Image (tube, rainbow, N blue to C red; front, side, top):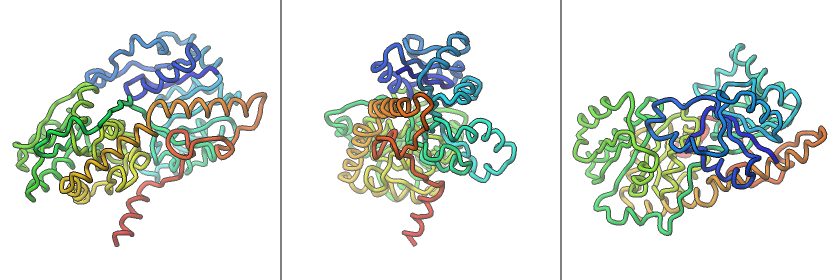
Length: 403
């Protein structure tokens, strides 16, 4: 079985999955990078080590070799790039393709009615709905977006991004010596990630007498603005801004953090920092609007979900965790188990290989592309059938329960 994965560029969120696929398939697995990585992500350490990967090939360096590779593959996984011409011929010839997609209506599902957008969606997606084209949903709301345009009906599967799995004998060992709890936030300082929400929740909790430290790991366009906010809200004595760090450094801090705040909104297609925090055994409070949150978090069991933009509710989630060390530890342990047992690159690769084999067998010699309900798939986690989760539905259901 020959599989080719095509995306904009390789990064530390995709390397673990590719390493396992290469381990299983050898020379029959290749990752095609379609563009060089931007300088900001290079500064953050995203591209380190990519030059030595034996399964990586760049389409802008070897265009003809990539074309032959895509044409000759049994399955092509395609996502994160705009070069539709790379898979157009495969789709027309009804060769299997797995689309790998984040949300297409991050700014609001009302956008699906625009004629120009629908024409493009028809050309790229809708007209191939009867062929062996499937959708790997990199986010909980992806299936809902594509359902609006009647694409990939019966052919959508849960997926995401899979950071390197770290196994611990005790995922809490490095946070055992804390005199006060440590709260952490990590990411780029930009609007869609709402770092100010972490600062404002922390300031309110401090004013109520809670003792803790707050680590803000990252940098970006709003760094000085956030430092000013921290000063204005009286957080100078408990907050630390680290600047950009390499991924492994971020993980080291997560291993010591008691609570992790994931505040990204609906514009965050996935949010791999959530995988990393849960793998590190953090008790998490996560914005329900981000793509990863509903897939990874079972509210109240392995973390908390809070309504998008509701800082007061976020603060209450953190309050519960600060007040109850046993609750923090229990939720952190369950978060770790979620990644260790289900949402990890090995589990994703095993499911993906099984899915590919079944599709290839069923579509050989022009066979009908099967509905996912006809395939042997896991009940949960990567490569399980994707449910339709509508944006705002968790929030609406929660508010009714509270009312």
